[in-house]
Image 1 (cartoon, one colour):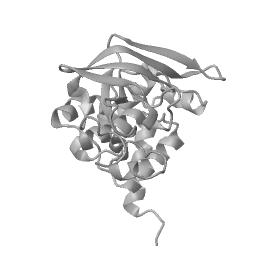
Image 2 (cartoon, rainbow, N blue to C red):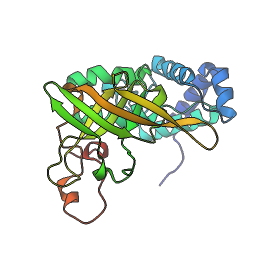
Image 3 (cartoon, helix red, strand yellow):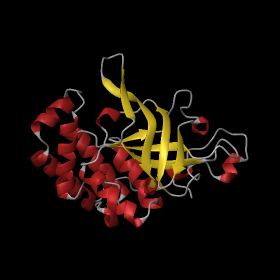
Length: 256
């Protein structure tokens, strides 16, 4: 097996390196090199620069606006960004919720949500963990009850990274209490500006505000924001029949 880069790959590396040298803002580079977290404006500014170049999402296929790079090209891009002092792009939108929308969302949902993720206009956060329900997502209690054309969401999420900046949160919610606890879970997209949402900071030992608690008090969410089928964001049926720990949700794991 030849582990050396090909001439074409080395040429690609040179192009990425030159682009970063020409376009990475000095103030952002300096902040990253000092091991300081870029603020929201810096993060979105850098995402917009990459978006304008057509490099906003290195792992996305071309049909959704990505560059369609091979895994090696993606690796080279990440290596060069790290070496140049570029800030890390936001995984929550680009690498977590976007692939779920691409795979399980309908065409209207793809057209509505993916462009804002790619451009950096919309900031996303993750709503999985709850007090007493971290990796054991089968025990989550945040409920979403369908009332007409809306879900009404009540409950609490915790350890929500950078939720204080978020425009949207993708949540695992309980839409049914029937059957096994691993079942009855749905994947819902929630506008953080909805009435009834409260974000409370969790200040870490270093004094930084990175994580949060998010409370939902009768939050109305359009039913059209459900990704995939109701009650189908839990483990696959085969994983529910065994005695092992619950698997990651079906939608999140990429399994149907």
